[in-house]
Length: 102
Image (cartoon, rainbow, N blue to C red; front, side):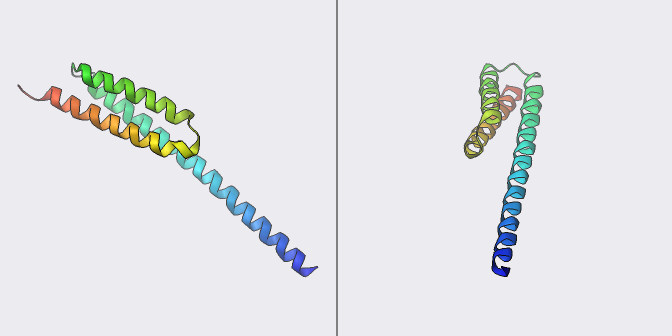
């Protein structure tokens, strides 16, 4: 009887820990997406100050990647997040190049 009670308590502890990790992961995914959304808006604001067709095209790609990231299952988010970061970095470089004196 005591062994069964200990086994039940251990199982409940493991289930509770797993549920906590799942909730924590969902919370961090939500925060990560919010941070990336804010970065997209920051780059979009910078883009409004220059005329750069290539940066505009890159921002369209970034918007699409952000939509995909929001809808993606957890196992595909890391790859999409990396692609989004790369697109935003490209857009920032293109904006910087457009701002350079000629």
